[in-house]
Image (tube, rainbow, N blue to C red; front, side, top):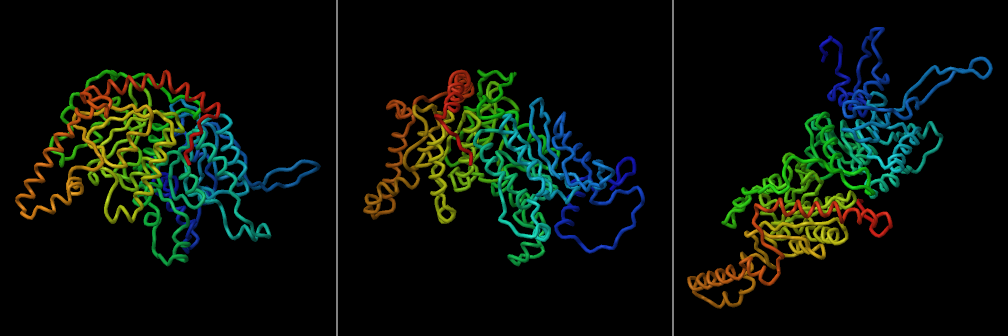
Length: 543
């Protein structure tokens, strides 16, 4: 592949880098190719190329430890000496800006040892991790062919073996719980420690064309599990890890990865000791959403598009979805209302009728902790018939993950506003709507609720009565009588009469009401929350 000037650029393209990393993991046998005098060897350092990639994501970049690396010195006269061989550190780190926001960068340089970490320079990485905490700056991690750098040859070099140290994870855990944004991108194969580094982020994204993530490469896997012939993509590509929750989002390529990193950072503060940024918005907070009056079908068995509700209520163009390809019974993400960041939680009635399964519970659990560490209020649209049921639900431990979700709802303290759009049943509905005291919630006229849905609930509650009716026609007539009676009693207005729901609103007013609540939260409640965190009264935990 050649560029417009006829120069060979295959090694600097994502596909070229992927090929180089693959060769590093399992080098093929090749005849030595002839090389012209001016051609760089394949393992020659290309720090400037890596910096170009960083400048793509950052408008300015200042490298830290620019001359760190392995140096062979030649002794001259007296105290003089000169370097005769220099291999730079293959982890490029420094400061930069993303849309005006100061950040700390760390990026693998694939051109040196195919990005595999140089264990001798661990202090450089630790320094930058500590710096992010000390300066309260977001940290962006670009992983491209990185592992921990471990090799059996290290034993021969050192003369002894060692128990693997892991000093960085104590620092990373502190970053995550302090609400210092950790954003990771998989821009090539992420192996071992490299995989762990990007997964241990608040948000991660993988490039579809070159990204892969795994604990060990195909050769090691073949020897251990006898799974042979696996490619990087088979073992840990996007279809694997963007659909199981290991990686949050999928991007088409590197550029799209960078854009997602820019976007999500715009919703987040520099740390949990600050408020999320507020932007001016041209979308009026009191805008009526008249289309919401007809979005819920009158026929209860029919579905609707829950994302349409979200995009209609929030500021135009501000919806950023997280984890769209996994835990699809739930929808989560970030948006803005009146220019203020807000976390979004919604159930997805188009998948499993909205019943919350194990993966959906894990997804919401993670998002609740995410919003909690970043002081982001939560807006949730509730339409949940309960936890998923059946053998698949039981086999995947739905109740265990559902209880973990419940404890997260009741242990986090980020403000929550709930909009009941349709169904609220069972334990799942109860924990979502009863997690704050006093409750901040409204319901639409389409709301229905109870311990069990009528379908199935009538059979259970009146099993003996219905079983005693031998004639099938009479039994069906009695069932219909019961259904009509319960439907009448379940009129949401009756619940409002008993103050079982605080208010039933016109759906068109949803944006106006939520925007007023969010404005008050930012002006009055979040500043008090920052004081509580500073005084140690609350301790948000992400991991």
